[in-house]
Length: 172
Image (cartoon, rainbow, N blue to C red; front, side):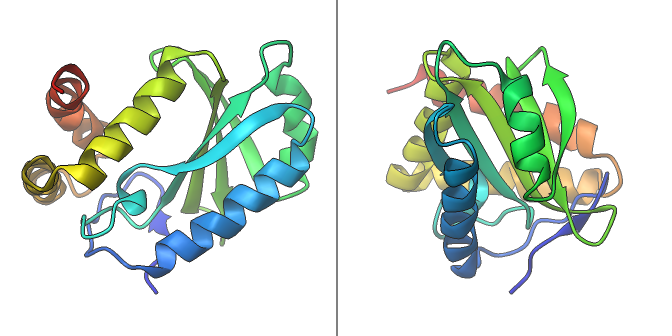
């Protein structure tokens, strides 16, 4: 199984069905750690979409109960090995990462409000890519081209996908 990517680098590899299994275990561990603070934990992103090439980093989203604070989750997730990377204002989430060994990113965990637009959009994009083969093919082509263009610039790679992600969110 191919899992993990040096922080800041970009490599897109063929889908590995083992990612689904790894994500299932990671979701269960996060859900148990945040039991009273989380409504749901889902596998999102490209590794959650069969037949879609992806960076070999598992993306998860956790929906925080409306009355809870993500700060309360920090020590619980730290016990699982997650480090808090702070709030991402543009996405409306708190990012936690799981590295092993140091500097090799395995999991991105996005903690968002259960009633937030970010939660809805994470699931909407994943579900659209799962159900729509032409959209999945377009997305994969863009990802592969961006990975070739920006192998050492994760931010540029991510910015390059924004317009396509917006299109996925705006079309039925």
